[in-house]
Length: 174
Image 1 (cartoon, helix red, strand yellow):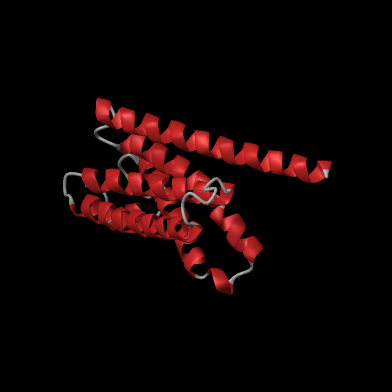
Image 2 (image 1 turned 30 degrees about the vertical axis):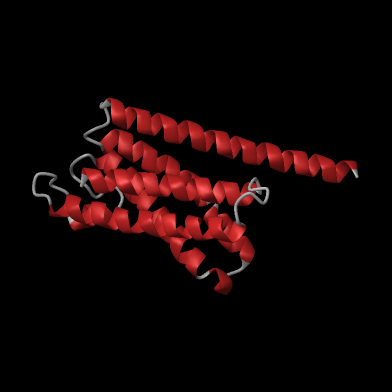
């Protein structure tokens, strides 16, 4: 279950990186936008599949003592209640984002965009869950992973915000 937890986390991070790069328009023709969108979708699918496997393995592990209900209902776990709830909420958000993205042509763009913005919260919750519930959290490798993914994604998000503000300033100046 640990390996699938790490895989789910890294896949979600890669999906976020691709999504931020697409929305920031920082590809500058160096990478095909279509290819980056495909990567974004594939990493999202990988994150969903790895998360489902992670949950199944945790529930099936008798030592974990996590019921199926506790895995899908926030705060239903008698054990590690808060950290489990954080993971459950993150999973529900990622599922909502994935489903609405696959149904994007059937829902209004503004609704899709608002729901898609929840990805930032889902990623933050996934990180918090990993740190709080992860049994490898104190290992140097896990700490390096969490630091590298957090810093890199925060930097990309900051770049996206700065590029958006610069674009608005150019628009207002002309």
